[in-house]
Image (cartoon, rainbow, N blue to C red; front, side, top):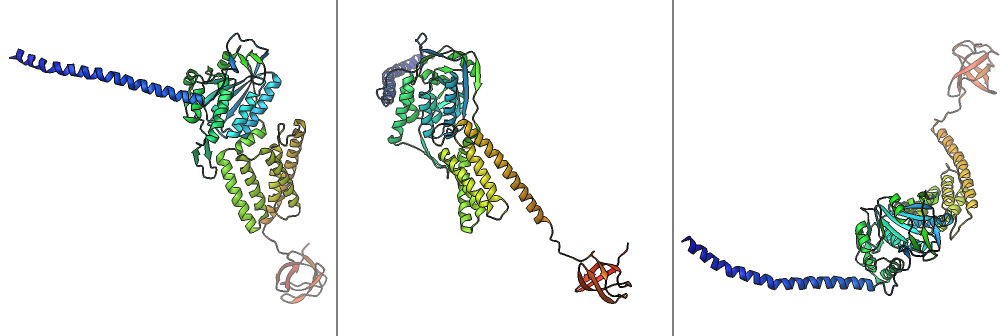
Length: 482
């Protein structure tokens, strides 16, 4: 009975298994075909991205293969700067200053990047400055990331490196409204195409993957350090600065604006800190701070003009100008306006009664204007020695006038806190002109004037008296005691 049951089950299962095998055999080619179609679509998409770069020649610049002939040697020192926070006008000027300094020292410039991105125009200027550098510029992503404009700058460096754990990518530009804090992605080809072309010209020419470069903009690709190295958009992964130096030591780099050079480093590292002007500009460029300054400055100026409050106009004008400066207004023009505005307010202070608010605002504007004055470069640039002397002179003048103004304000406030004291004859000395009986009245001479007086004691004519009170027009006196 059991044998019959097993035989029946086998007869039923055998056709089912055969049918299942046949179905799987039929579906397998379909799955393979679908997989092949996906691969073809992905390959086609990557080819389409590469086509967006146009006819970009092969690798011409950047890190060259070992044994490449070179014209000169750069080293033995390395100059290090750190681009951190928002990419803005301050960071652009900082990079330009550092490139000039590294060129004067014939040193390799290492740019440590830790930025979420920033303004497009300063980033493009930084790309062009790196391409025109006469020494190798090494980009090194540290700590967290180099997104958006930071990726654009990294792709322009002659050698690109990343720390493990950092990321790059997301290069699609956005429109940002500092007043509301809202932003939206930009999709217009009129804006995207120049960025793609810039990436291809300064990235693909260094041997970096054109598909990934275009994907940064159109697909917002993001890569870790290991992925970026595997995809071919960076050349080095290093844990720290020392490991980076050891890996690039002896490398040959072809410069777009100069000869092919060999990097020879002895381990000497010189950090190039940002100047006071750069630090101040970078602080003011914070989107939250610049938006707040713009709002407060506009409101203060509006209400001060409506009420005729001159000190409020001065403060509102200062806040508004600082907010414009942080929003991308030309710092060279801003420094000139601050100097002129500060001088005007100091002149107004001389003819305006008050407690020094106008003059104090003028001093602040004057000092900030001199601090933001460009030492070198384009615009209202000044000679370094002249600008430094002018800066120290302005600081000294500002501290002197500011100290005097603070002292005057302190004295005025102190005087305002004192309760008013009325003039009184009480305690004054005099001479009796008449005999004055107790409870009676007579004349006395007090402070050159005749007064009718009374007393509780007998006072003889010619005796000295002291005023002890006053009731209406009648003085109350007593005999003076030696």
